[in-house]
Length: 118
Length: 176
Image (cartoon, rainbow over all chains, first blue to last red; front, top):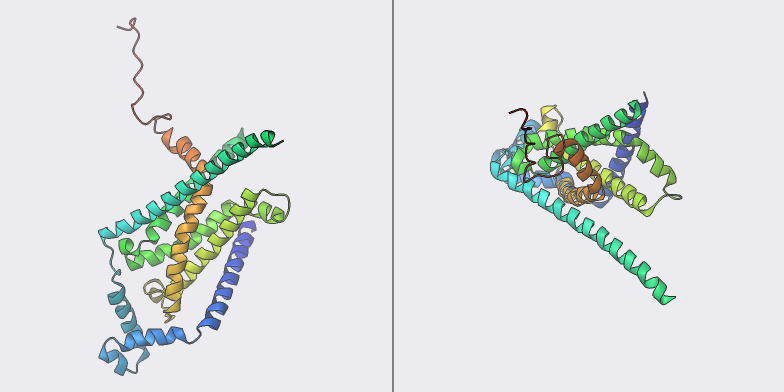
């Protein structure tokens, strides 16, 4: 019961974040989303633009996106992306740990200077 | 003794869950490697993983929330703000991912028909997540190193040294 309550709290906070996002996105560009999708469809196949059925548009839309995005199927070369992310995280960890170490050194140096100033 | 044993088990669970989340994040953040289907389903599973992670650290969360404005160190405040940003960012990633879903939601019969700005926000949030996860790992780096040494390196028999391996003890001459 306790765990369920905590999960509900987490989901409530997440819903608040989502609500704020929708509010901001809605205010900034409320008419942009369907136009963008439709423009992608209209620049694609002729059958999509002339078709009046919503189902055919819904089927054609993912295919248009797949052909444009190009990462529908997995590729082994994609592991470069994983390694890239790992390198970026490693660099951040390294910089942070060096920064903390430098802060420690500066703090010790500062405390060493204080007796001389007095 | 039982309390210590429970704490050690809790630490093992934390290490296992955190490692899974980290690896899952690295893989999910590379859709060229996984393909769109695995990318989307893994992203949705990350939501459950993050909820699990928060439940495991609930006591810390409540304690620092109560003491945030008074009676806590700047390190704890920094960590709290970082974790809050991380939570918001992952929520954005998952929400915008659902809005632009091409495999997972259509598989469930849901078609949202959104794109454009949600896609841009999804990419932006994913890039920001990389930085925030990096900082999160950096803040807890000492704990990670200690736990990996304790639960992975030492049980494998390296005992703090990778190379050269510890020489085998010589047998006594009496046995010969």
